[in-house]
Length: 209
Image (tube, rainbow, N blue to C red; front, top):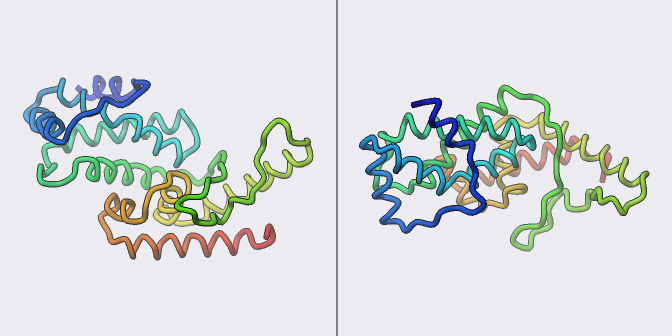
């Protein structure tokens, strides 16, 4: 059963399968009763979101695939504990968050960081980092890569929760309220965590200002 779950989680369709809330609850109930086909549909419904989140965290398709599979395996094993009066998506993303946090605690090196786009009209801290389009001159591309490497190193110095919150906000574009729900904490706690992460990064990269 475990191997089959891992194999299924590795298949990502071009588009998610849409389901109403009532249909989703029906799938969850059936999956909790041991209906494997219903669980397979739940995986297909959320697989792209889970994989995208993992890729945003580790910036490695191979590592992201492992996290993706691990998350769905944990969901399969613990689905019987899910309460039907809660939001399934919030519960699922909380499992994914925990898997990513565990990964960040084990891994200290990050290969690549992409500059985030502005969200909600805010001015993002790293929006002025040069991009690396082929049309740019070689010196600028080299400089951009050096800055990217500095940012990557700075991010590894954050504690796992600070780093993940920063990733979710600036690279995934999630609202603080949504991140709080996924982490099982308040929006204010997430806001404080994000503030600490940003302050640490500003200190680490002060010479780039």
